[in-house]
Image 1: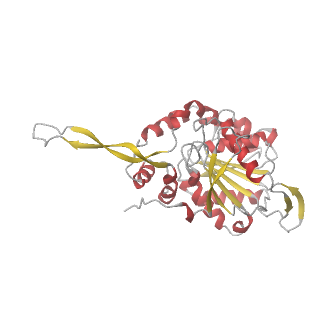
Image 2: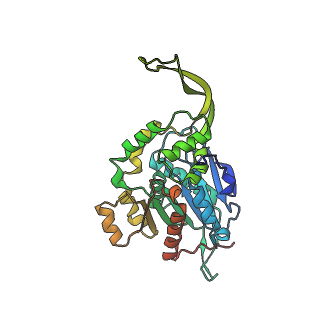
Image 3: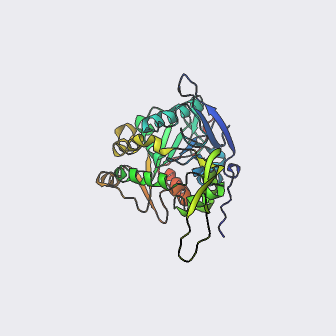
Length: 353
């Protein structure tokens, strides 16, 4: 029997905290929920994991755990997983503006606020000081999060951006994606009686194929609402041989509802896809190594195929996964990231003050 019992975050991250951005920087009074490992070690480079639309930071729980447990990374990298605006436990006065530029500005503000004063000396793989500056930042984003990290790299305004990995986000999907998102939103049960029920729906719907990941990610996507109306169908009478069983809806109060109302941001969806190719291949970020990690059903268009043959980004096609590649096969995603960083001689070594 499948176990759908929820799992809490401490098994996957070292710490969880609230982090407010100054109102002078962001007038929407945004307060992030951050899941981190090695958060207090300001001399370390940073791996930033950015979730997709409708999901939450805990979508990267198994990836974060595997990265942190990788030999060498435990002591040599910080890991940051934020709940984005309108997602998870992050709060603001504007939860529905999910335009890619707005979310990219959010990420810029967060990274600058968190790491802007972390200045030190860079070390190479032999321990030799080779430069001075802010910590090196490695961006990894899934779906909508992939478009966000691509936008941040395209602007190239945050010091220290050293690599970008985009998980299953392609501009070629711009025509099909809105219908798929609407279908997903409509298919979600409006109210779940228990957290386990939400997890079970997530697995049985194919949203997440990995039960272990769903058990930690879905609890971050829902919240208990004592005023939620949970429909219950009750028979009005016993059927006879010539009648059918009519049902009359009854209700009970209280249940778990989804934290993110994606339909409220429908007008923003196309922004996640528009210009993704151009931003990914832009000269403004050409010096930043890039990697695409795609599900088996995803295919490059002509423009990206040509760019790939020119060596302008790396590519990994994953098998036996759905859209949520980081949840369905976190080990394969981590291996792809490690090989990508190794191939580009990216050394996740600390810089010292």
